[in-house]
Length: 269
Picture (cartoon, rainbow, N blue to C red):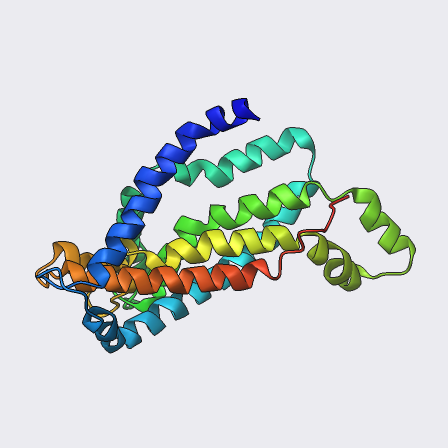
């Protein structure tokens, strides 16, 4: 037991320095003013940005839902193909993640620009040009592209453990494809669904690079708002800390709710 405590010491030190201390600092700045006096003014001022919070949550929900719809059949196909093909397919899924996040987003700016590749192609067939960039749709597209692997991998890791004989038994007992999907595969893959939703929604709701580069100034999200308070012209670290604290609370509540749908006692066959 003593040995386990010693082995866990580096993690505890890391957690204290890089998790606990920053949270304490955020809380301190959120509840103090420039003179260091306690105040609730910063928290109350967060209410004026309710529309930005709603927009961020809404776009994050849309991006997460699209990622789930796209990832679920792909993850199932990956889990059912031959083992020697799985590694190749997984490498293709993870390949975009090997490139810098900023460069990937810049690439979409080139594709979606008014004189970008997509609009040039649309002009050739007489449809374009269309306003693709600096829109909410472009922001959602950027989220889906960048965070899709975070949905695929948890789903795949869970589905890969579902024994094929379980699905065959359901078919033998008279279940059609629809019933097999919703009464066998979905319940068994629920932990992967919950993990995937969490891993996509959390970074999507707090992103600022994607919204700035693909959404323009008209699609301000929470991440952009926080950055403005610390690095922008509207420098106000106390308000920025209050917004960060509220965002942290929202994410914590959402994760708590999502954990209620994860069957901890479920055993994957």
